[in-house]
Amino acid sequence: MKPLVAIVGRPNVGKSTLFNRLIGRRIALVEDQPGVTRDRHYADAAWGGRAFTFIDTGGFVPGEKDSLLKQVREQAQLAVEECDVIIFVTDGREGVTGADEAVAKYLRKSGKPVIVAVNKLDTTSGQMQSLTADFYKMGLGEVHAMSAEHGLGVPGLFDEVVEKLPPKEEGEDAEAPPDDGIIRVAIIGRPNVGKSTLVNAILKEKRVVASEIPGTTRDPIDSPLTYKDRKLLLTDTAGIRRKKTIAHQIEKYSVIAALKVMERSDVAVLLMDATEPAVDQDAKLAGLAEERGRALVIVVNKWDLIDADQRRQEAFRESLRHSLKFVGYAPIIFTSALTGSKVEKVMDAAVELAEQFRFRAPTPQLNRLLEYMVDNHPAPIVRSKPLRLYYITQVTSAPPTFALTCNHPEGVPDMYKRYITNQLRKTFDLRVPIRLVFRERP
Ligand code: GDP
Ligand code: GDP
Image 1 (spheres, rainbow, N blue to C red):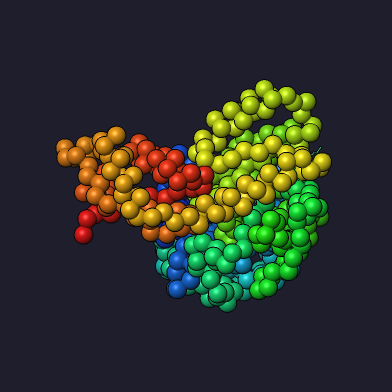
Image 2 (cartoon, helix red, strand yellow):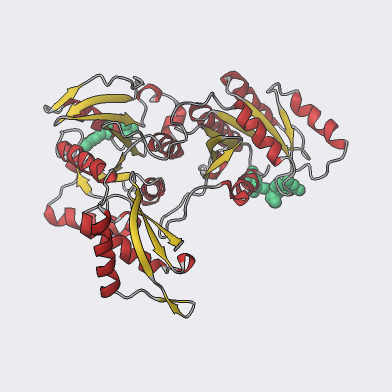
């Protein structure tokens, strides 16, 4: 799991500017997937031999009715609970404000490593020394002068972040969870949709044997179990332990928590509340799973509260399919975690998708499919020449990733990419994210 680095601070100090600069430096490794609802408030980065993820906590729009102080404090709390290093951005021209003091007090108590970034210092004059002095007095240690707008001091900031990261863990840079036969399932969703109830229902399931998996950390939020001879590790992002804290009740917590556990999961089970659909937030979480390339099971929970017949369910499914178009491959299951209804179906889907997630296609079969695809739907013209696809091979799994050799790797239209993806899905029955890479013929 990559370490998380949070950017906190009151509005207008330059958090977004800093964040956009981080992305602009092309340190963002996140690949653009067409049609994904993207939450651009996190970005993967690599620096000084370490990989980590930046999160702009200010970007998770807080409630408008909340006071400034409350908003900033909530951000800081999220950062403290979930992140490894905190960049506390302040405005060097305005100096230390009351809101800054309040956040500083909270951060000091947390004991988390903090870097104070004093922003908007656009010139490298000696004046800067005196300007940053007040920020040292906040007692958070390291103070870093910078200008996000002009890019001054940003590399130095990176150096400091890397210095403060926790010691490197084995497998932390891996793009996919280890292939050790254990199916890692993340239970994600907004607060109160029934995540903990679902985990409890699964653990009560007759076919489940609670088990000790050697070598796994027994975090209280992790539940190892055996189901139909398969070893599973469920991670409940509701975090039973943290249930009482305010941060847990904040919607944006679910995004950060999902981001955190998704990394080390094969399958994400996204719960939503049938009685209280929150399309935007649910779509954000689904988009996260797609972007991170994880298998996804969509679960519509609390179905017992809906006075539903078959028609109602089909209508619900249709409207979900429409609002979550970009994950059209993901199965949708209607459950009641409270009564245990259809809970086993969720488990079966998770196990099946985990297999597809690790799927490997034989190269000869892939190339027969390529031939068929090109025959049936001739490749388009790119820069007045027909696009030629020569060869296809699967380069990695988890998620399945295919490389196509062609004459114009840059010019393949999105529509043709979708056509290829859909054909791969159909041929190999893949209901997980699929990645395509286009390469020039050597
Ligand atoms: P956020 O609310 O903390 O995300 O702040 P923004 O990134 O939106 O920046 C607020 C304002 O400060 C914008 O008008 C920015 O252009 C400006 N700003 C950000 N960084 C700098 C800087 O380094 N120098 C100067 N002079 N202005 C900056
Ligand atoms: P979490 O925050 O996502 O972990 O949600 P919880 O598991 O704590 O559930 C929130 C509330 O919804 C609790 O009062 C549960 O009893 C209730 N709940 C969860 N699942 C169901 C369900 O399938 N049907 C009904 N009627 N209530 C449910």
